[in-house]
Structures are given as C-alpha cells and as structure tokens.
Image (cartoon, rainbow, N blue to C red; front, side, top):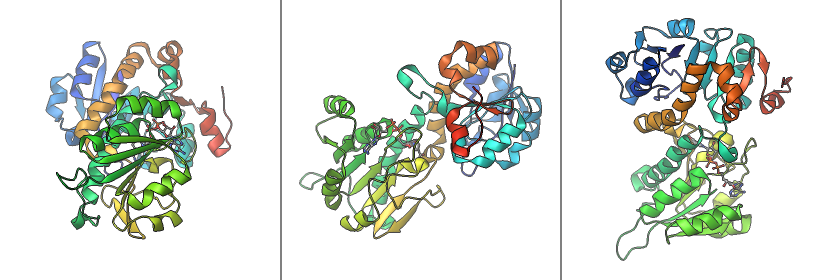
Length: 365
Ligand SMILES: NC(=O)c1ccc[n+]([C@@H]2O[C@H](COP(=O)([O-])OP(=O)(O)OC[C@H]3O[C@@H](n4cnc5c(N)ncnc54)[C@H](O)[C@@H]3O)[C@@H](O)[C@H]2O)c1
C-alpha cells in the first residue's frame, strides 16, 4: 500500500502522524511511505532519518495526496486540503466532525473514507486514540497552571508546593477521568494540596485507593465546588460527558467568589469548557483575564510539546495503521470492531449517527 504523511498545516500544529520508526516497520512489510519534506522537523525528525528508514521524501502536499492510497495525519484537513482529497482515498486522523459542518460537507463531497482517531474504540468502550492526548494535556495543565500562578505572569504569586513552614497552593480538579487523574498525580507530586471532584463514585473510590494522601476525593456538586472556590489557587477543568457539551460547573457569577490571580486551566475547552467564561485560545495568546481570574483555554495543548505528543500519539495509532496497510481498510475494519467504530464518512455517506445528527443530515448504516 502507498501511505502518505503530509506536513500539518493547521496553526501551531507541530506533531507528525508517522515517525521514522513506524516508517521502517511499514517499509519492511513491503509498503511504500511518502513523507512530505519537513513533516517531522518540529517533532525532532529530519527528512534524512525518514529516508534512512526507507521513505520517499516528496516536495509538496499535492504530491502526497495525489499518490497515496492512505493518508495518515494528526489534525483534520483544513480548507486548503479539501480539494486534494481523492475519491476512494482513506484518511486516518482526528476529525471531530460534529464541530464543523464545512469539513463534514467537504469530506462527503470528496467520496473519501474518513476513519477518525477519536471514535476508534477499545475494550470496555474506551477511546484508545484519545487517551494519550488526554494524558499529555492533564500533565501539562499543572505545568501551565504553576507558571500562571507566578506574579510576573499575572497570578497570585504562589509556589504550588510551598516550602517548609509555608503551606502549599490549593488545586481543585473538576473531573477524575484521564485528564483529571494525570493532573492530580502531577500536582500531588509537586506537593500541592489537591482536591479532585467527580460524579462517578466508583472512580472516586478507585482514586482514593491509588492517589497519595495530599489528594482529597470529593463528590462533585455546586455546593462542594462553591465551598472550594474562595480558597483555591488553581482550578483545572477536566469534565467530559461523551458527545455532549461540557456542563458549566463554574458560572460567571461564581468568579466573584474567587480571589484575584486565581488561575483556571479549562482543558475541556474543546467540548465548550466547564467554566462558563471559557472560550478557545491559542498557544500564541493562551490566556485572558475576567474578574481578576486568569483563564487558560488552549484547545490543542499537546501541540506545544510535539516531541512528547508525537510519540504518545503514534504509539497508539501505529498498530491500527499497520492493520490498515496490511489488510486494506475494508478487511481491517471488518475484522476489528473497534477500528470499525472509527468510520465516520464512507464514499460520500455519513455512517456515524452522531455526525449526521449534529447537522440534520442522513445516516447510512
Ligand atoms: N485542550 C486540550 O488540548 C485537550 C486535550 C486532551 C483532552 N481534552 C479534553 O479534556 C476533557 C476531559 O477528557 P478526559 O479524557 O479526561 O475524559 P474522561 O471521560 O476520561 O473523564 C471525564 C470525567 O468527567 C466526569 N464528569 C462528568 N460530569 C461531571 C461533573 N458534573 N462533575 C465532575 N466530573 C464530571 C466523568 O465522570 C469522567 O470521570 C475532554 O473534553 C477532552 O476532549 C482537551
């Protein structure tokens, strides 16, 4: 099979969907790999390393799309790429179709096959291709929070872990899923005083047994959140109700109950955010302040640490890419139910009900 990996052209997207290591495995199995020149540069991989692994480096994105049977990417195609996608071509990438009608219509028109990372399922209905990026974002949230708590960055001027004789900062994490758990581990490791809230009691029980003693697990409701706000320094929003908009657990009016210089990192911004005053920001301009509260709401946090994120992502996606390359997408999805769940659009037809429902378009099962 001919597999093409273009350079990402979305703003500040530094990851690449295929490493030289993955290239070597594909080429050894008899596949052809086309890499657009410079595709791996921002993740630390040179064209020469891909060539050494057996890839063919091509000069432009047009050639990658024109020659490849399968395109492997990180983010959804942007408008410039719509016309490059060919009928019958397989695209394996994050799409998040429900958030973009133009993208959905363009992919339907293209008659390509769109296999979305975010809807591939694993055992017990897990989302194995979303988890690694949640792990990165959860860990990063604490790093970013610590930075913005510093006075020169506009924060209260408090060190997360305190020092001997001085109490640590208080961190409130809303949501105890993948993002919330990774954030809790990092904040606890830095010796902050951490409170994690969730509505899933089994999850709280499990974390109570596994997280260190400086993490308190509390049931999430408005009363408990309100009690924490006046004494919290850093809030991390990590709530998810699959397929739905995130609930606003902190309203605009509640900002008034927080101290000036409190920092909110709303990781759930991609689902609308769990703080009412959240709106998406970029790595170029990540924060804004409302009522003295610093908001950090970057929608693609992992894009800032591509050396880590590219490996975390490709470790998870590569086994699926191998199946697609070896068997072709039709057999691979027929034989692997979890991979089949990734099919969103097939040859001009929407096959995932959630995408069709989002735009009132017909679904074909
Ligand atoms: N900004 C970014 O760059 C970035 C990166 C990765 C993930 N995310 C987003 O972060 C969010 C969290 O992802 P995740 O992988 O941790 O999801 P997850 O499903 O693992 O965890 C979500 C948790 O929220 C809990 N929850 C639901 N309603 C709640 C409520 N009212 N109060 C408290 N908790 C509640 C759930 O019980 C669950 O434990 C998602 O929106 C995801 O898309 C953003």
